[in-house]
Length: 271
Image (cartoon, rainbow, N blue to C red; front, side):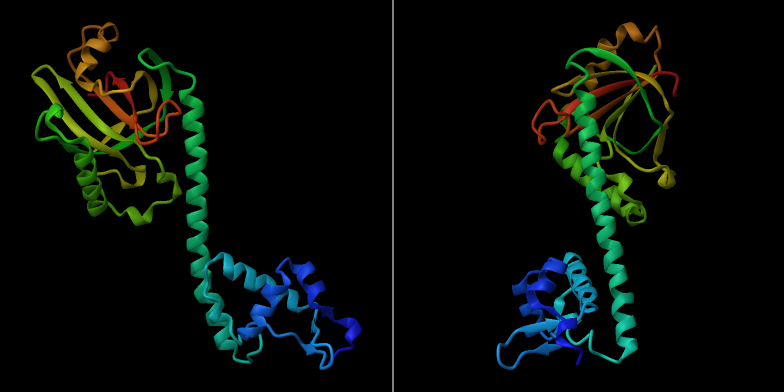
């Protein structure tokens, strides 16, 4: 054993690592991290400086929700295969956790940007802005929109999207993707679709590409897609073929999260 003067008391180890004395005692009881020396008279626990790295590993495992029972005896074993397998197995857990954290961070950033953006515009007024390229996976509506239960429509469509697209291959950029209804206005009538935004890498069959451009848009508290020809009448310039997109914006900064703002977009020259 080292000279006791070269060891750290349990209090010093707790201060060094931030783990807390009770946590260190718990690790000892569970055979995860034992002190190198216990004074037989005072019962004081002592640790080496190197064991601080073990505490760091334990703390990270706690953050990753790795069961502490997997650590029992790990720091004392000579079985290097077990040690390697432990880190290899939990590397995957760390990667999944990192992806989840990135997903959450991206969601928060996108939500804040949406709120800040929407504060610039008033409900019921037409504006124009640059909108990036979009890819929408679409499905025709089999009946007029006024007869559709939107909640059920979106729920069923979401199942369709997940079933037909390899959603597991995409990253955190998919949070808060757009969804809503889309209408192609043609000389012989109008065709409505339900849509969900997808990343470019998944574009293919049943996908509509909306190119980057400056588009007219308007936000309303209720759906106005069927009234779009009247709303954008002065911007249509006699066109009889155009597209209207109505995005249901859940995080708008203008209403409750479960009460979406409906944003109409006029797409000319696309068809």
